[in-house]
Image (tube, rainbow, N blue to C red; front, side, top):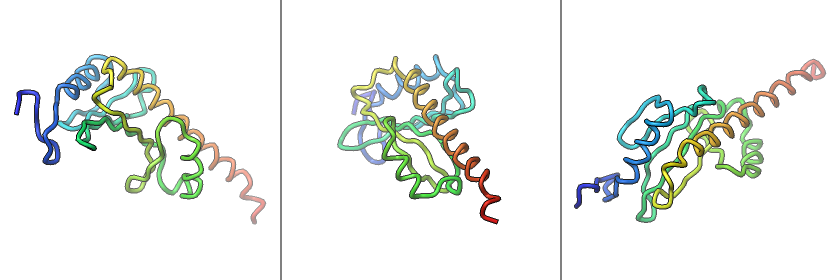
Length: 149
C-alpha cells in the first residue's frame, strides 16, 4: 500500500484526490466542519446553505457525494416529493431521517477539484430554490384554509 492509499469501509482507496478536494474547500470556501471522510462547506454567496461533501466508495472507485438539506419531512408530502424529484436536473431528493436533502454523486477520478466552489454554489442554490418552493407551496395552501372551515 502506497503513501496515498488508505482504508475506507474495508476497501483500499486513493486519497490524493480527496486531499485535493479538501484543500480547495479550505482555500476557497467557508468550512463549517471537516472530518476524515466528509467536509461541510458554505458557498460565499449562500452563507446559510450548508453543503456536505463526502468521500464514498462504489464500483471499485472513489466518489463524491454532495448533500444539502431542503426541508423537514412534514413540510413535503411523500408523493409530492417524488413528483418534484422527477423534475430535478441537479441531483435527487432523498429522505434522510426526518428531513429531505438534495443529493448528487460524482466520480472522484474525473472530478476537477478547481471546480469545487462552483459545484458547491450551484448545488446550494438548487437546495435553496427547492426550499423556497416548499415554503411557497405551504404558504399558498394556508391561504385557502378558511375555505375548508
